[in-house]
Image 1 (cartoon, one colour):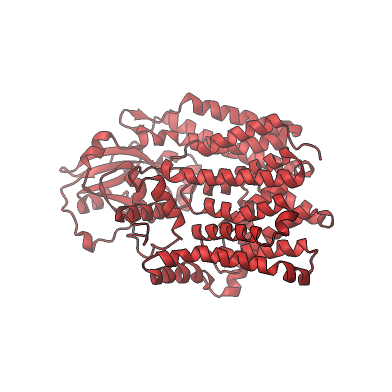
Image 2 (cartoon, rainbow, N blue to C red):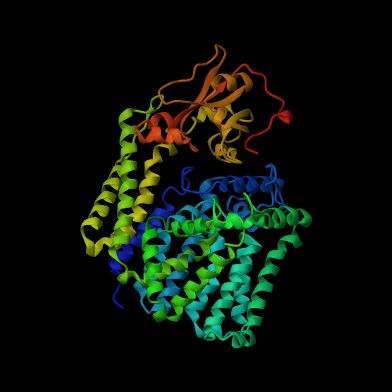
Length: 573
């Protein structure tokens, strides 16, 4: 097999990938999922209680939302919340993601016989947007993906010795699956055991009797051991009935209830249809979505000539897709454990893939970079910012943007290098996204030391558009007692200042809020808004960025009496 790309290219993209995953790791604006805030809240509350279990939370209906492994991880890396930072919470996620890439590289290198193909598989997986989005923040996905996929990568690596192992491999698989369940959900034993059964079935040349005789007990060992590891939660938690009711019944069984009309109609139409599941699964590849589509098409066309390892990768994908099409709540996020298999298939077919899929990726990257450049230039030239602080980019940012554009244009113009440069440009685009918001990570987006000192121990009301959004504000106003109100009201300065003695409000850039005579601005910073309306999105596309995408947040002291907290609903909860 001809080398997919040179060692020099592999080394460059590997270093670029490592930098990408570490760059801006502590950023509040890193691509993520809203679950990170509730997870942070549970870690902090559980650490404050001083016990590993039961899990603690002030959020209504959200306590045992996930098994304790992810929360124990957060407690350990923050030293019982005494070293509280996004970086301390997130670095284990990057470690898990790196280990997944490493073992994927080893497995593909072993069965393909080519080191570069193994490296390529790892780099392609890291280049997927879903890997970048869910593989860095403080979420349950990185450990879940690692522990669920590890037994299958072991089968691909060891081959016959693993398939013929009577007890050692089944025990290894059971422990790995168990840790995956202990990180995310016991429900993952269904697709994992089905995929394992399909692997053994294919190994026995599609003979059901041979599989039942030689391998059924191995699957049973793995399943029993995995569920036994998960059952430790019930054994260790002092309130197992609450775990059963909140997690098993509420968090998992509830996903089978009809969400709109009835189960069959939801399966075929709407936001939870099987078609949307397929689309979001492909979309996990991000810029490489069309590269993935062409890979699957090639697999279909050459289905009679696929080797056993390619068939095993496809069986793993099929098992997860089948199982997660059954619940009425369907999401491509549930298919994250099979994205390494997709990456391996892309690497194996790399040289035979048509160039147009990579050129589409380059065009998408060019579009994103152009948009970031347009927004960045407008912000810097407009002079938006706070008092004595303007929105200013470093020389590194402009160098990064220029280098990224050159790489993308070279990829579009040089067909021989299009594939390699499209892969490198994925990481460069993610870096550009982080760098574009870097000014908000400095003085511009933070309260002054004086403001933080003055807010110690005081009740402050903040806008909340996500559950537990106050966990982010704890990084901005450490030591303050935070309470949430609906973020949609953040611009209603008159109502807010008449209701709360210390409140954070929004005002358009360059237009300070109109305050009462006794009101006083005690802090100011710039913030990026989220959850825009369709009208606001259209206005931003027409150039009104400063009006809708960014706002100035003012912390205002007012003469209002402090409300009775027992009668006021905290919107962050």
